[in-house]
Image: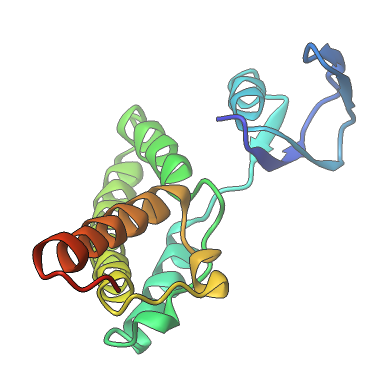
Length: 166
């Protein structure tokens, strides 16, 4: 929630004291602010968080599926991709618009398939002991946690159980 998020400013905010610094947002500009602040300002209608729409999520899924069996083909995502999707899902759940229910169904389907494909690729990278920084930088924080945990388990398995450190 403290990561910077790009927002579109819909209304002037005046000066906001963040403790260590102050920021001012002006209507019509694009700025990067902490995600927690972006969400609060979005609730009040002052900003709009840049989040992927269903078409963009479908494009990402398509790209991941193109090389489904190639773990090194993992696609770069937004920094807070899963958190943003969680907020999108909550917004769609709380909507009374009937079209939003269909969008919610599509988002669930896309995210389920996308996360499964990416998880498979991440597990394969860990199994192959690939520690290339360009690939790791394409993972979200949640995915990197999975990757590093599996990699550590495999290192212990090969080192402690088999007696061969890799």
